[in-house]
Structure formats: C-alpha cells, structure tokens
Amino acid sequence: MDVDALMDTQRAFDAVAPTYHRANVENPILAAMRARVWQAVERYVPPGSHLLDLGCGPGTDEAHLAARGYRITAIDLSPAMVREARQRVRARGLDALVRVEPLGIHDVDRLAPAEFDAAWSNLGALNCVTDLDEAASAIGRRLRPGGMLIASVVGRVCPWEIALYAWRRDWRRIRVRYGRTATAVPLDGGRIWTQYYSPAAFERTFAGSGFRCVERRALGLFAPPPYMQAFAERHPRLIERLQRLDGAVGAWPGLRAWGDHFLVVMRKV
Image (tube, rainbow, N blue to C red; front, top):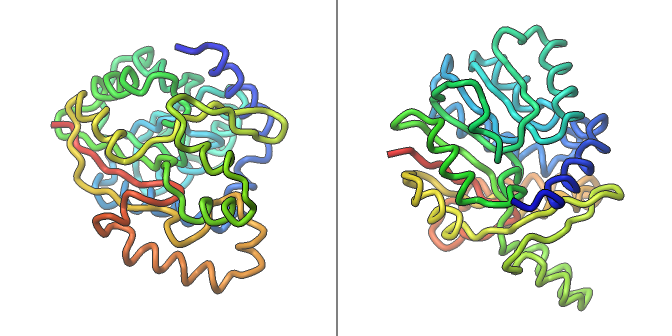
C-alpha cells in the first residue's frame, strides 16, 4: 500500500469537500454519468437491499438511493467527505437507512461483520485504490453469493481527450492515461493519485476474486469529459444529443471499451 499516495488523495478531497456536492450536481456531464449508475443499481438490485458504497464522497448517491428504500453502508477515505455525507443524510431524514464510516476502500475488512447484497462505486473511486487486486478480494468477501458490483471507472481511451490534446499538440498529456503506474491528477491545488484501467484489465482483476461481468457500457464516449463543463454549458443542446447517442450505442461491442469512464456490472459467482 502506498501510504503517501493515499494521504495526498485524502488531503485533496478533504479540501474540496464543502463544495464537492454542488460542483458535481451543477456539472451536466457528471450528473448524467452519476444517473447512469443509479439506473444500474435500481435495475439490478431491488429496494430494501443492503448496499455498500465504496467511496461515497459528500453523500450525493446516498440521498438519492436511500430515498428509494435502499439500506446503505457508505465509506470514504476523506473525513471531511464523511462529515458532508452524514450531514446530507441527516438533513433528509434518512439516518435510519444510511451509515457512513471514515474508511478507505482498502479498509473494507474493518467494517463490522456484515454481508451485503450489492456494492457500488461511482465516478472513479476505485481508480484511487493503491492495490486493485487486494480491493477486489476484500469486496468479494463482503458480498453474498450472487451479489452485484456496479462501478463507474475512469478508462484509458477517451476520444474527446485524445482529439483535444492532439489539436493542442500536447502529446505528453495524451499519454497520461496509458501509464503503468498511478498518476498524480491535480484537484484545486491538491493531487489525487489515479490509476487508469481498460475495461478488460479491470474485469480480469475482479474475475480473479470470483466476479463475472454481466454488463459493460461506455460513459462519456461521444459526450466530452467532465472537465469540459464550460463547453457543455455553452452548448447544452449539443451535449444532450451526444449523451443520447452515448445511451444508444455505448453498450455496443468495441465502442463499450472506450469513453472517459466505463460502467461495469459484475456478479459474484
């Protein structure tokens, strides 16, 4: 485990915690990606199930899913994010359905004994773990047989990013996602250590811990990446059309391996 990388990541998220929920929900690209994960959870896991959120941030997902009847245990590496999540859940009267703990994904074995019906991880939290093999094993131990894992993961091949930085002739920036080790990604003066994955490599890792893929689709294939929020706000109709196109063809073989993120649904067998 790279403790220094985890501490950098924790400090970066602590610093942005007070504004992170608002920044996310006001970003139309991120909001659409988040909604895809919600739809997958609701499609594969019935209300009333006990879910494990791997990297809850400020509790945006908790407020949505608990209101639909799910019981949730949520964890996050950042203590400041945990405080935000607890406040958000409390303000909505969902305390009885949601428990939030200050634990990283690498700490999932430290949770009180419990077997979960499903786990989910939104918007790249699993990209920040320092050992994905260990995380996959630990997650597998906490899910019941037949339990689901639903994750949106930052991918390697983002067509918009390649086109943008090729136009700028910034070849080094294009290569960032293809590194063999974690990369420091800036966040408001801090840095988040991020490992990018292809869908095939991610699925192989979890297959080693007893998971089988049942669905995969691209997120942000034709729509631009979330850091292009200003462009999206200037061209809302274009973004809506591109997001509809993502929805229509994002699960096609070949295309589903690309995109700023990918959404993968796996079952513990």
